[in-house]
Amino acid sequence: MSHAPTGILASRHQQIRQAIVGRSLDALVVTSLPNITYLTNFSGSSAAVVMTEDRILFFTDSRYHTTVTERQAGPCACPGFELVVVEGSYDATVTAHLARLGARQIGFEAAHLTVSRHEWIASTLTAQSPGSKLVATEGVVEVGRVVKDAYEVGVLREAAQRLSDVATAAFADVRTGLTEREVAGSIDRRIREAGFERPAFETIVASGPNSALPHARPTERKLTEGDLVVLDFGGVYDSYCVDLTRTVAVGRASARSREVHAAVLSAHDAAVAAVVPGQSRFAIDAAARARLEAAGMADAFGHGTGHGLGIEIHEDPRIVKRRPDVDTRGEQVALGMVFTIEPGAYFPGWGGVRIEDDVLVTKGGVETLTRVTTELLEL
Ligand code: GLY
Ligand code: MN
Ligand code: MN
Image (cartoon, rainbow, N blue to C red; front, top):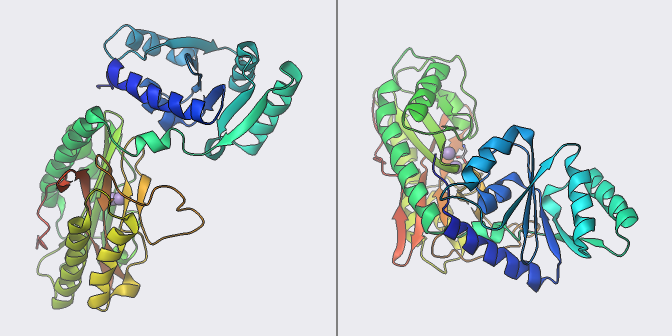
């Protein structure tokens, strides 16, 4: 498994430090594990980070001590790394170090700290370090993660190629008489054989009427002649997620299946064609929606057109209709962003179609990272 080289981590740190200084903070407590991975290469299940203008304290427990120490001896060492091995509770250890640092304005990640943990840390800090204060922050690290650096683009490009190969091979798994679970099991095996650490989410194999459920779970239903089958799967490769969907027919596709597939493909192609640096993510979503509306299928497309990909399977930017309560960050897509384009049309009781690719915003517009035929295959 490869990790971001030290120089890449250093430039990520520099960006976060600018944000820390810009917000007049003395320290930022990072509790989101994906954000910790981004800053340190750590990919275990328990850690915390305290970043200041010139230090990075990394807290983990004895389970990860050896792994972390070994990585620090190699080319992917986290610069400035000060390891603190937690023996009791994480929050008590972090709080004691914050008090010792003399940090007064202490940022925390409001989206990633529970109310009870916040209350405990705040009251303990008040006792140990009067005058220090917890300050809510939003998206300090995520704002950096949304634009992929050269290392991340390389990993995502490689991962998308591997996932495309999985898709092409997986078409052979679609056969009359096999159950959705059996097909999903074969795809999961292929994902691991292709070098992925694990599937990025529970693989979706949704056949016949089940294909009308956008997030169906595979069942014991047997694939049947004439079915549409949605195959939606992803993999985690060197900590980065890629995601792909194709909808295929078992045997000959009906005229209606062809019509729905053609409308979804047209929406997919329109959205991909709309991707260019500076474009509104809401406009990309609208480009897909307009094609389905023209086909009389506007009501059949309930979810967003896409989502960012990276250390998490669903991250910014969200390619959606504007939602005033949550769509508060950056409207325009920018060079280096990676996200899915995945329109669909779903008709309860009949079935549905989704086509999903992963795209990179380039200087010239867009590069489709996943490369698999988008024709309606009859298998
Ligand atoms: N099934 C997850 C996704 O495509 O977003
Ligand atoms: Mn997706
Ligand atoms: Mn997907």
